[in-house]
Amino acid sequence: MSAIAAAYGLNVTPRDLALLCQKVENHVVGAPCGVMDQMASACGEANKLLAMVCQPAEVKELVMIPSHIRFWGLDSGIRHSVGGGDYGSVRVGTYMGRKMIKCAASDLVSVSSTSDAPAQSDDYKEKGRDVLKSEASMEYLCKLPPHRYEAAYSKDIPETITGDAFLEKYGDHDDMVTVIDPKRSYSVKAPTRHPIYENFRVETFKALLTAANTDEQLSALGELMYQCHYSYNACGLGSDGTDRLVNLVQEMQHRKTPENGGPNLYGAKITGGGSGGSVCVIGKNCLQSAEEIAEIQQRYKAATGYQPIVFDGSSPGAGKFGYLKIRRRLIITK
Image 1 (cartoon, rainbow, N blue to C red):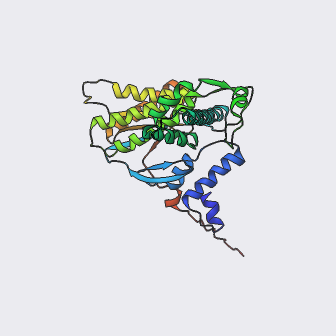
Image 2 (tube, rainbow, N blue to C red):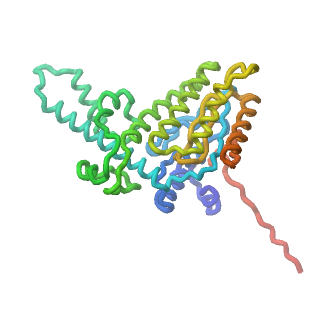
């Protein structure tokens, strides 16, 4: 997309570049993907993490990776696709859950408004109604704090629901790029819970990056990545290959050897839309970590026959990189 824009002399901002790429995937390819990968590719910078909100696509800031921390990508060899049924059905379940929460919040607002109110204004109840009103008009599940989800909605979100049962009760799930199959059963609870808790994990991860350089810092960062990985699995977006890679990282982390003064690798998680693709690993920025990554690579090959590609280092996104123009010289011969 960046090359096409340059070829036609178009000045497209990195954010708009990402949104155009998402439109191609949604409306041309037919993949109901979000915009996270495109934003990282377009707006990212070397040695920094991109803090963003997909509402719909806003960069908050670029977070410097501390020099004692290193990330690796390990390709599972399993083709990742957001155009498949798994990703689409999980997205449908997520939007179903959002609709259920909004309707439940609206019902609670109605109940609180029609209940017998005391003669004097109750400030506590008024504030409670304001919270419910904001939740009734909520556009993004990640806006809902985990404590509010657990306090007010979790118990009423079903594990699964059939398409026809949902459509009969709620009408529509309000997503422009997916369609509910009335005859299909959709997982709802896990896909609804994931963005609520994932947003909290991401904010915590960002805060921890600025903490002191300690093993406890790395352990906490790694634990957040593990939690994300297994939350994806609960949604149905895992795969045998990515699970194997994460398990190998865990083995390395907890392995005891005479010369081992502590772990070098601390966590791992599936990336992107899941269902295959690559695993991201966090560890100390040291030679021993790189050696353990190489060992994981070989052990995965021995078990599966596929040697994972290791993505190491960092580079700028399309916005910072710009483009290369190749000029072709015509050699005229007589």
